[in-house]
Amino acid sequence: MLAVFGVGVAWAGQLRPQASSNWAGWVVTAAGRNARLDRHFTTVSASWIQPSGSCTPGVRTFAAFWVGLGGYANNSKALEQIGSEVDCARDGTPAYYAWYEFVPRPFVMIHTVKVSPGDEIHAIVHVSGDNVKVWLRDVTSGGPAFVKSHVMSAPVPDTSAADWIAEAPSNCDPNNRCNPLRLTDFGAVTFMSASATSIGSAGRHRGAIDDPVFRAYGEILLRSNSFPGNSLDTVTFASPSTLATGGHSFSVAYGPTSATGPTGTSGTTGTTGTTGTTGTTGTTGASGTTGAT
Image (cartoon, rainbow, N blue to C red; front, side, top):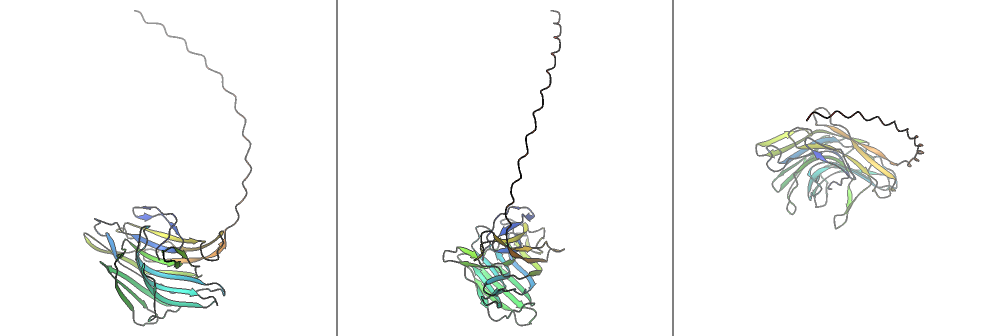
């Protein structure tokens, strides 16, 4: 699903840390038209170890881990993504699976790849013109990779950003008004070998998340109280770590759902000090003599 942000201002080289109700992770943006090497992105990839879900009977929860292109800008209408998920059923049983999605089309479960907690997942999204190819393999099980190609139109693919994300999936109505679902307690997930490939007037460039060729990069914190069943004073977090040396790896940690503390009472206002006395007025100096005519 597309990102839903609170605050965030970009400047050259880095994005101000941002709060989102559904995304946690890192994102890089391209410079756009006339850029020598990063007009837009063509490829994003990474590996991660599938986390296990901590489930509570009676509570349905969801957590997705993915790489993708697009979906970041406020006016974005498309997102090309592939990843894995852990959902908790109402009876407290976790379900693990792989999926892909070409937003605004709904997500599709991948039945040919069986995902288990602890498995290493490797995923790639590649876009060329209107053609999108997503690729995913469970490295641990050693089975064949899943590959899906699709031509996107109305909207065309969004390649203005590359994303490495842990997400609280959303439930959307026919008018595309979406609310995040309650996030599964996944402990932590580490994205490894993260890279993106961009293209511009001078050719292609492949780099890490913080590669200086890319226009900007930044972290996103998931902070939400809009999950079904949460009260207005309850907040759920998922927080990304700083980038490891080299910019190819980081972790996202689940933050426990907890009520915000009460607002403390205001302290008493101190008394105003006394007004000091006004100093004496100095004497006026003598007038000089008038010069001779």
